[in-house]
Image (tube, rainbow, N blue to C red):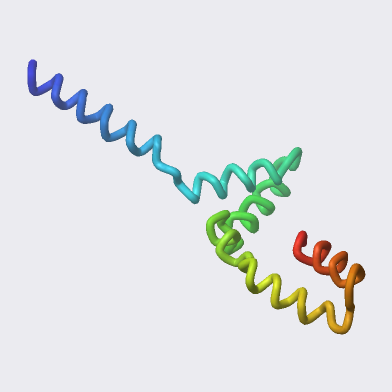
Length: 97
């Protein structure tokens, strides 16, 4: 009886931690499912297949974002010879992108 209780408790602990884990594949599946919208049948299968094959998991997408320093350098370069208020406005808009 004690063995059975220990097994059941272990099962709950094991499954509970697995459910609580943040699984990137599940996140990707949920995102693709949402993007699929009202597609049905073969159209939906094709869409889901292509979406899941994309190399763009949320964590990877975040890693590809430029840093603030990289954005500043790019905006400075694009600002060129602008001066004063014109430069401030340009830089503000550029850094918001």
